[in-house]
Length: 618
Ligand code: AMP
Image (cartoon, rainbow, N blue to C red; front, top):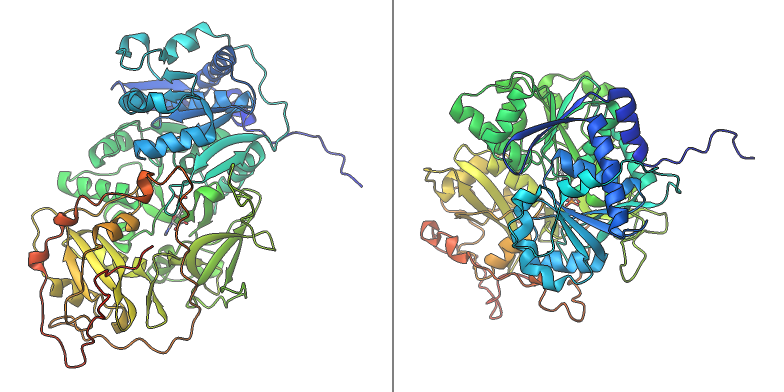
């Protein structure tokens, strides 16, 4: 028997309709790419988004066509986004931090018909224009006066909007219609497209509005630093209009001073970004003696939040940090580290330990922790396993991918993350499956070591990778980028780690580097680090950290250890794809002069003759 309620398709145009109807005067403030701060409202954005739909129809776009955006977080980007989705086309958010070759691949793979771009990205589009023949038009998010002719045929967004009618009906199609497309950053193989539906976006919005998730309200002023081109700004450009919150869009300026200026001048109460952005803000606040007079909450995700950031916000500025985990494939929010009742009864220091974990699953997300044979692992907070996830806003298959099936027999998607779940159902990521260091059959969490090392007062950033070791298979190597003007020794860092991690987790070496590369989504780019460090050889005394800590042998293998990740498959014709063959250009940035070479201990194991390649091929 069917229910007898109204058939009201869950399409995202209804979100902006709602914002216009009930919060029409609420402001959207943008730092424009041209420079000035621009103020608009949900009512104006709604009207202009409808004009965008008509302009796109006029340029030949049909429902289902992909229209790409290559743009910062601004009010215009929101107009384009709703204008595309409202008429039933697919909004493909391109990540401008990708290499030009990656953009070409993604644009052609998605078969984008139009690209709507900010002025910032006109040069890169001009350089690849002849390699993306399927793109019929490029629209520049500006006026005629700002078009410099470098992209022949480019259209001015403002002219199109001005000349188009706002008379168009949105929606009216099946809620499972595709709405958005976002490619994962492609840490192995080619980037993969996640094709969101109206229904998945709508449900994700409802779930993230919950007070144990993002919990934003009509009275909030929300600054999404997290870009719309990275997993839909964690859904904030849906959830803010859904509740009628004021939106502050930071445009191209994401440095500490610029973000701080907007936080203060616009009275921001809630913000969201990856840890590196918050680290830049805290550094700026401390050096400028700045204050945060309105900010109450920040959500941090994308990579693990370091304890120093949580404490810094809490103790110095009275701002509450909530840690979140997710991925492009989960729309993106998967878990949020808000306390359950039992955790809320603990003292502040105990609660903080739970804040550092990645959090609990909201309704709509199912989690499973399994070994390689898909056997469930205990939720004891210590056993590592593969994290799998299912739900109505989790990817079912990739767009136009070969091989098709990506779910297990129970319909769960393997996240590629290695995690623990504790007795409260709180999940903690211990590593990416391909980054976990396998030493003597045991696992070492690279993330845990780098988070602690990043808390050293002289460290700006830290990264840990596995280095092939003749006896233990792999051993951890710590790379540190020091704060400007600081100098440090390897022993200072090893002493700092001593007592905070198991002795056999202690890195075999510490290398000071000028740069720790971040990938297109702001995360530490381990793949590039491994590439840059491919000629690195452990010091002869690997296993004994000079003067500091003696390495204990790893215990006998007893826990789950996965099969190594398969080598990425290079599709014919893509052998030269840049992201599979990055040219290391900064191995020189490693300051080897600071590396100590202590004498080999008696039980030192000589490297086998084939140890010229110190890293496993990955
Ligand atoms: P992306 O699809 O680019 O957003 O990347 C998703 C991946 O980022 C996840 O599978 C995790 O490996 C990582 N990630 C996201 N949030 C966190 C977090 N809070 N802590 C640790 N890793 C995270």
